[in-house]
Image (tube, rainbow, N blue to C red; front, top):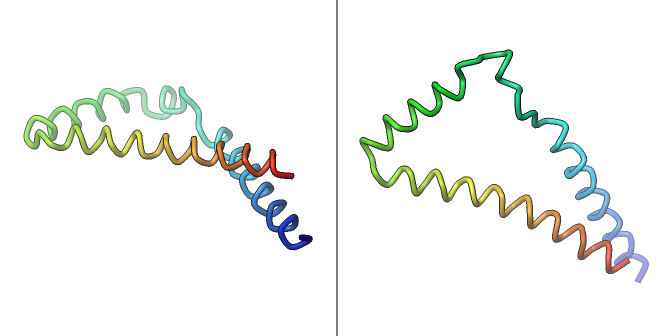
Length: 85
């Protein structure tokens, strides 16, 4: 029983550590001062490659939603562990 509680605490602290660290790394306007044309460049290159290879759009969309799913799964895990303690 004690091992189960310790394991739950380790998982909880790991998830909290990750969830606290992630928002600090992301800034919506980061490239506005560093490289003002970054979004324009990325959009142009993406359109250029998607026009050549039509399946790339679906792959990029899938990758985006996979990343979002992983983040949501971490939050769900945190809530599940938190309710179990």
